[in-house]
Each structure stands twice: as C-alpha cells, then as structure tokens.
Length: 218
Image (cartoon, rainbow, N blue to C red; front, side):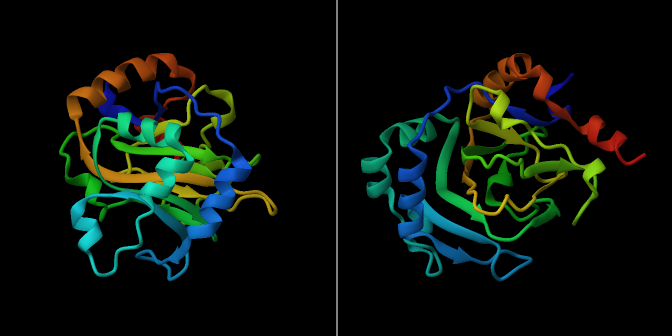
C-alpha cells in the first residue's frame, strides 16, 4: 500500500487523557457559532492558537492561546509537536449534521503532497461514532460510510485526505458532546511521511484506503 492511497489513518502520538468536564467547560466559556461555506450555523468554534496573519484578519475570531496554555499545557505541547507550522488551531463542535464534502477551499491544502495531510485531534468523542469517510457527497446511506473507531486506539491524533475524498459528521447522541481540534498550517512533508509510514503499520487494522471507499460505490 502506497501512502498516497491512504484516505485515513490514526497517527502514532501518545494519547492524552484530558479532564473532559474541565475541557467542555473551558470550551463553553469562549465558544462562538460560526458559518461555513454551506451553512450559517454549523459549528461552535474556539480559536486557541493563530499566526500573525489570522490575528490581523478583521473577521478573525478572538485567540485564547494564553488561556489554553495555562489550562491545558499537555494538549498544547502535543499540538506544537505535530509536523505542521501552525497558522490556526481551533476547537470545533458541530451543532448540526455535516454532509459528506471535500475541503477544496482549505488553506492547509497549499501542500502539493498527494497523500493524507489534514491533521485532527479528537478530544471528546461521543459513545456513538460521528466522523466518517464516504465515496459519495452530501448525505450518503449508512452502508456507504466508514466510521473510524477512536475507542479502539491509543491516540487522539489522525489524518485524512480531505481535498478529493469525502468526509462528514453525523450528529452525536443527544446529551453527549464531541470536541475536536482542527488546525491549518504548512506541513513538514518529510516529517509527516516518517510519522505516517510507522502509523499505517501500527494501526493497519484501522487504515481506510481510497480503493476501499471506491469499492463501496458498486
């Protein structure tokens, strides 16, 4: 299996055991509802790190980097250890289902490397899986969705191919929460390939391939 054929893989980073209640309270204190290119209210978002360009953008959200560093130093250390020159780091929680889509507009896609390169951290994962990969857009049927099993691995970190593979998020079970880290920046491809090579071996039973998704269309 070539790395360019990987659609999703967990990544070999230590798993953080965070105080879920504290994290949710922290997020709820600073979150704001944000629009996307398809909806006026899809996500609740909190920015915890940003580059100089983002801090100067008139529509940019407030950056709570000092607060995040003070309250969750281990989380910030993990984020800074990723092979990405960070431009923006946010905590996201979707408040409606997110249809399967491709991130053709995302600033992290400036990297020409063809394999999976979008980094995420799952911070609070609801009991019922929500994030999925699919061969089809919008709202594919359940038989055309693959939900990675975050409860079966020893890491919070994953990456996926987001510009030409569809991904989405179902709505979490009522009464539960789901928080993830979304980050944008410039990928250190050499370091990323090294991490991904060992990760697809370690998490081989959880890797989702492009061919695997294509076969679901038939």
